[in-house]
Length: 299
Image 1 (cartoon, rainbow, N blue to C red):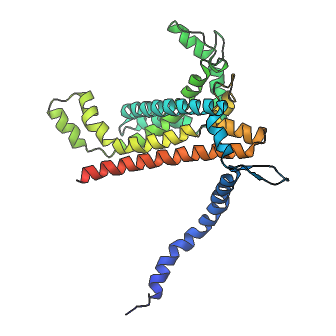
Image 2 (tube, helix red, strand yellow):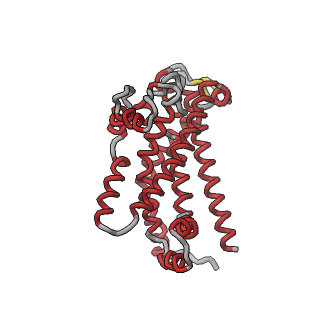
């Protein structure tokens, strides 16, 4: 016998969706509809006021074969790997050093976290001053103390990408540090005491207790940092604008240049779709690896 659901049950199921409806409508208007339009544009030669012309996969073929795109993809991957690894390692080191409940540590943590909340335009200008390419520049003066340099930093094709990567690591590490600090707060302190009682030194406690406990934080941070590095734009745009000689051109700056400066909106949309696909693939791979590890742990 079919039972009609009660009014209270229906109201209970409907209420959350009513609260979510305004956000969902805005999200659809400003996120999914533009995304769908970008997918359409990636298969067309976009001609404003003349009508789009269907070109099939030609835009995608240009993205994966054009030398400028391949170079930009290579720079993007180098930045993604370098910034992700550097910011995670530096964030972990800062978290281990600044872990604790003392009041002075909160002051130091706040000071360390400031780069993350500082506007990128300000950060870029500060680093442009630090990278002043003369022997009396601040960074070159520091290098002179160890007998290195002077370097042209942002003005040389050999050093520009590494200089931008350093800025990314410096800005991303404090964010990673806060995630690690939150994860460290959940580590069972009795494990440290038991390890110390067994004669384990500091490094062995870090290796056998701390790092395994931080594994979920590593997974989250590596995913977020990798996606953030793949979509890097502001640092490049403000510091080098893709130069010199295209040595710091990444996928996002090339898409911007093609779409808004040269008017090749279809090719730019195809590049955006490739970047979206890589980000989604990366997220799925991390999710599957986590599920696999969780399944092994349960069994």
